Length: 372
Image (cartoon, rainbow, N blue to C red; front, side):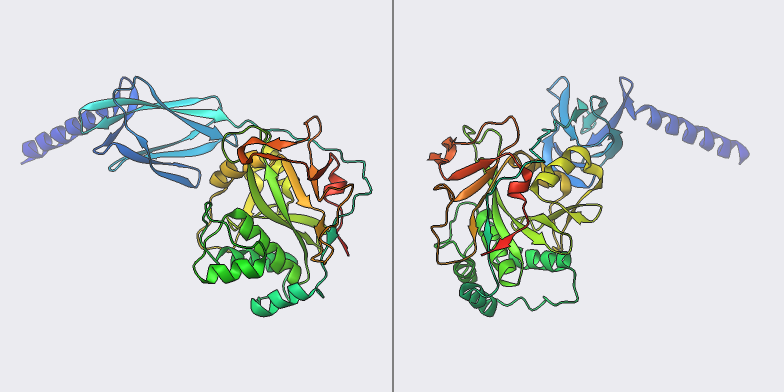
């Protein structure tokens, strides 16, 4: 009996050693798979089925943008997985064994995030005045009556109220970038949405702005554009809302399409501060939201970052009958980074940008709002 047990123990040890040897190939770890499409995760962001095992490629390389010094990475096949940290300018290699026969040399490459360090004039200020609404306006009263926000009360912080209004707006319809609302005001958009309408980013921005203004805030639509907006082949813009928080004495960036408010150490950020925080404080940057399904920080930044270069907003946010309010014949104000050229055309939309005053000064674009 003892001899039998001894033989069994030797067999088990031999098989264990054999299995351990099978976990490497050419000195690198192996990951087993029976299907070609795999999932991978970077920090908390999964990409499902977006990587295919390719044994025919000599050194199949997956680049991973590193927004911070250590990115957690997981590579998951249908039956196996491997996890490790990846740093900028480093690589991790392993083999994927497909159906126990085909070996695919796979390399995960850490790519440094290319931050665009934008600067503005932080000392000067012109006499440019942007007008904002008052809650006595008849249109805003109608909006408030037809689409009341019953969750608003004086016991909540302004930040909490804005987050709830953001979440309410995001839930009105599903995003559709190819469908334009018939009219561009909140009541018309919301009425059309009730009939099943689905609209792009600017519709969320308009509804969010109008609802906040109807409930006593000062809010505006902000048009974001890329550094290469003049000639970019794809869409060079995105539209968001900014709202002035009196209890924080600052402007806050909110994106109605994605239902997010970027904050740093709990403080809401404006568009310029958001771009700077991505560059320098990625790890502490938080996308606050009350939504059930929220885009991850990595995916949102991958989408929005390029758009955070040129910013413009209308000079008249007052809902007054005097819709012809302009300064020197211009109806909008564009914030331009120092050393950047003024944006004067956008080929993608076949349009001339001839409606803007240009400024490099933060204090022009982010002045405390004045009601008309």
